[in-house]
Length: 57
Image (cartoon, rainbow, N blue to C red; front, side, top):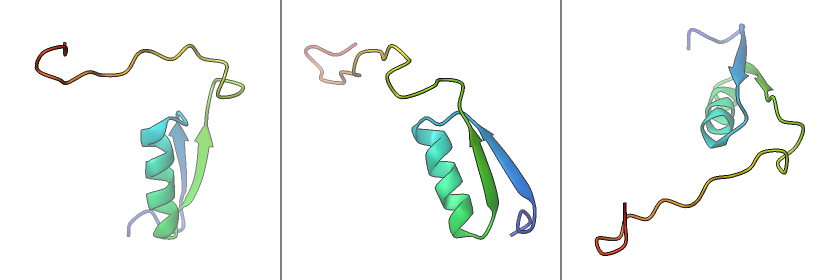
């Protein structure tokens, strides 16, 4: 892998950022994840996505 031996910064500790960080770590890449929010309760979360035909968006 081209990133082995390099330092990678990931901006955002959401589901995608953390998944990417874990996948890179599994391949031997050094990863640092940066997150703006102080903790998980700092941000107001949106609603869930409803994909049902009768009630969905």
